[in-house]
Length: 290
Image 1 (tube, helix red, strand yellow):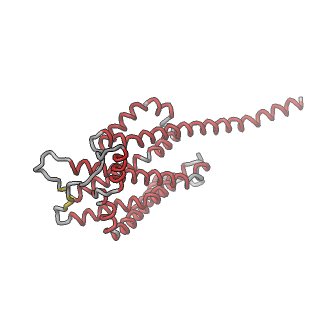
Image 2 (spheres, helix red, strand yellow):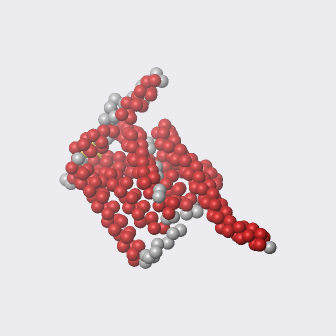
């Protein structure tokens, strides 16, 4: 690991971290202002869209159901209304939703700031992978957000919005509850999709190996099913739909870990050959002189 010429003290590291957090917070704030101004589009076209039976996910499921000769997955109505029961309810929902959207928009910049903070502790070859790291990390996060929005959220809203314990009890959900479900589904999915990146760094640190991941694969599968049951409605189809990409990410993480270990072995072999070359040439020269 390359050490900087002027090694930083602990307080200097804290100062760098402080400015990293400040710049990240300013980026979130800037994104939040943009989201705050785009209130109508965000609430009408994005947040409240999964409540509409004509939402793209519901139409897709209906077409799949009809291809099998049934209308079992078709939705005509989602019987609930969204309401605000407090004086500052709508304004508070507007503020917090803007902050969440600001964080999502600023995510690539936040990743870039984190990369700059850890950059001094990396090898020269690893420093060259900055663009790839930011691109892949942001791509996985946004794919996770889209998966949460187009898969987890519609399934949850349809199930919870249609569920009744009695005909006399009607579903009138508070705005904060509705937006909270949507934001939790999307953000949790976005962070879950970062699993390959987490495994990459854990393998680099020597905390995880592909053998370890393979050995505990069955336990990971149980955890995936439990997590899928938590973030989705309690029906088998929804759990399977959510569990499939999670299992896929875990398998991809195993491949990534194995690739890193393989590359580390190759580097060590090259370094070993380089260190042994001078000694062998010296022996040859000494033999010639004798």
